[in-house]
Image 1 (cartoon, rainbow, N blue to C red):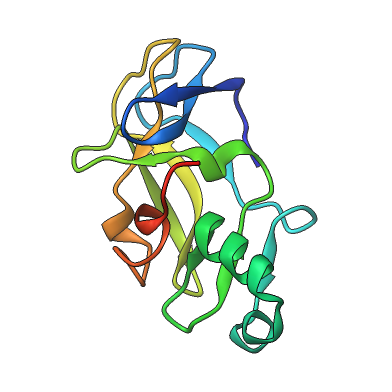
Image 2 (tube, rainbow, N blue to C red):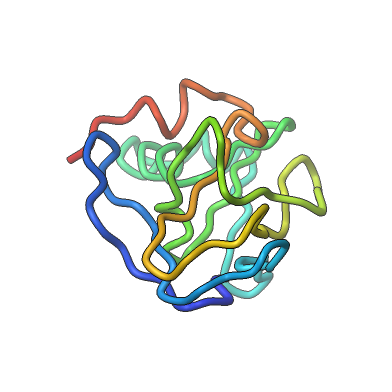
Length: 133
């Protein structure tokens, strides 16, 4: 669940991105797993979903090393990849980070980014492989 004020904005070449609506300090946690709102979709459940639902889960979910998908229900799912990100996931649980924090100061209006290579186990076949609609 997002712990800060954010907004979505078009990012050329990437689609929609997640931006902070406030200044953030270095090491500031801005997202954490919420057991009431976020979902774990087991690999067996995923395989049984209708195709349109599997496409959604693959696009917006994070595939863990055990084949399950972790689906964030808030706008954090729009956080884009960067090779040199300004945020990092930590406190791993079942192969997926359960919190996200900044790695440096981030000014109001800046895009929040993560390095997908650190936590998406089907990268680059996952999120980055979808066309922007």
